[in-house]
Length: 531
Image: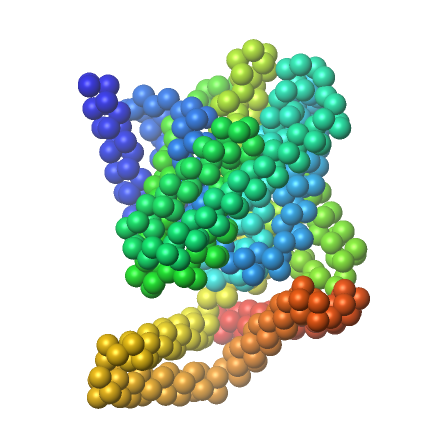
């Protein structure tokens, strides 16, 4: 009983520390996750708490809600548009990272290549929590945010599978490429299949039981249940959670009431905040600074290896996509810089390093190298990503942009409220007099917002052009989706579909280039105003 009370006290203290850090981080404009690691490092020196961090604690308890929350909120349409670069970075990218990091570390430290490839696999998983939170706050282009978050979702599962294969080869001294590829496909496909099936079943349940308490409970069970079921049958639990989150979020949410959606979003925001807080605080608490210093040379070699491999993967794969698939919108060079520098390492890498078996002679060195790379990525890359975004002109939240977003948001909210009232009226829950009065109020509000938008566009002509470009991009994406539907229904042939889709994609690419030049114009105007 005393042990239980002590554990509960530690959890309460950690949650209190995380909350205080969140409050302070907002005031000093430091990424929240970075602040947590720094506080954890300070606490590890002071040693007020004796906390044992295990891989099971991170992978089974904290990772499922983090992965599920990100997948649950991810728009499948945006994901589909960026699917080619995401999958290229998450699958071939992880394999290239494993081999490059393994080769560089083996040359630099003299360690066996099988062991260093194990390190390469565990460090290949990116953790962009700090970066994505910054993206949302600064108004970075949504496609870029989806690319960063989507890569992380899929490469987490890929890295874990590759790590298990590499570790088996390191321990046994035998690696069969054919068997390795087969195991990789089996574990990955198995996880995605289990997650998709469970996510679809939950979506059907949501459609029939629109009770917010039951639905939120079911999504919690899905997040942890998908992981546990997949791990029980020896396939990827993380990929199962990714698939479950994507399917349930994109299929199930369309059939829920606004009240249920609000409760779901609030629940998963809280669980993600709690998991992130615990993970990054525990990272700081677990680091032993004297041991890190003892391994400073291998850590430097590991950091260099990770940066070199990340550069090769991001710039190389992006170049290949641009050359081989011209009909797809290419990844702008500024986005490639962000993908490179924003490839932070965190919870997954730490959990895999902690799970290294004690029979592995180089375990301590690999563990300290992992801690070193994670600390470098969080404390150096995590704190410099905002200046990089500003220098590249990817921050969109200028005063005129904020004014437009505010008015546009109010216009969307007003339109949604009017539709809800109209539904109530047609269902007989509002009298004609009530409906006419409320409708008139909403019409007046809409008219005022439209007048305000027109006034804003009159004052900032570039803002109107940007809005037109975005509207045209959205229309072209809808046209491309319609072509896909027509092809699947047999209304047009595959040849015609490819020809028409290529035309649309080329127009989209041209619009993306025009939009990028518009952003540079805004940046130049703001710099002139500052001077």
